[in-house]
Length: 451
Image (cartoon, rainbow, N blue to C red):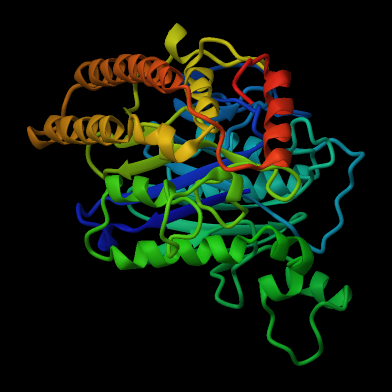
């Protein structure tokens, strides 16, 4: 489960397009921030997660948040300022679980590698979708996790919402603020639609004679969409976004992605009482099997490099967003290496040790470093702003700043972990099923933590 939003330049404080996404995946499904440099190749094919397709002669540099076992990415940006996030959606179009196809993450990476604008990326995704389909497993340990995809696709000047059902799709241009979650949202207000889409719905009996066609109304699977609680999360992100009309900043977008639980509820939050309605999602077990495994905020500038703020970790409410730009080299070294299936010293697992230790008594644990976390994030935002206030900074200056921020974050996670461990907190609240589930996840990850 995921949440993605975009605000067009006329909506934001800076006049730059702002993009945000939380990627919700299985708790041990580590993600990495990975750079792929621009390349020229004469290779005839490229291997995606499950299938290979023809390669193109030149690809753009891309920066992805990528699950360690997948070829594609949950979200990312390229050197031309194109930024994309995808969502799992559940539709009435049947999924062939036997025929290999592309994943939504594959489609996202292909679009970033091959597209110089949001319009071109939209066309890349729809072309590949119609040719190869998307009936591929999107799960990690859960090999029954199959779904279709929706996307927000943007560049510094424009943005599109693209929603799909099988090989059918509808797209509309975004004006102002738009949020998507794990459900179809496009009604009859689409700007583009796949050929034969309306006739397909009519043949299936989903569009009655004389009725107005609605992509959501015809193709949405009501049962799975309801239980994903996508409507509630979309309402929460939309409300927060619209409240910031004309003053939305990258830092405010980070705050939206950090919202935990019910924003209208007072009192301390504990993940054991969380559910699928939380924007920063915490896994609890059967009814909330996913948690936020990576987060991104993009500030896309029409002139000069854009800034891609990425956690490279789970749970943005306990993490710090790192400023990254393209072109660049930061996170291509050992500090930003691809995490493994079991805990290692990568950025993702370094933070994960901290987060899972906090689960012993979350309110008390996070209080031990919350002020420093906010101060560090504010320092990164102010430092990035200072670099751009003096004009277009050099790529070397931006990369040096990113590398310094990464070093400081790695040191902070280690220090905060040691501080929380020294508190020797007693478990609270009593939630035996929740604690049992986390003990199982920890064993599979090779972690030994307090019960």
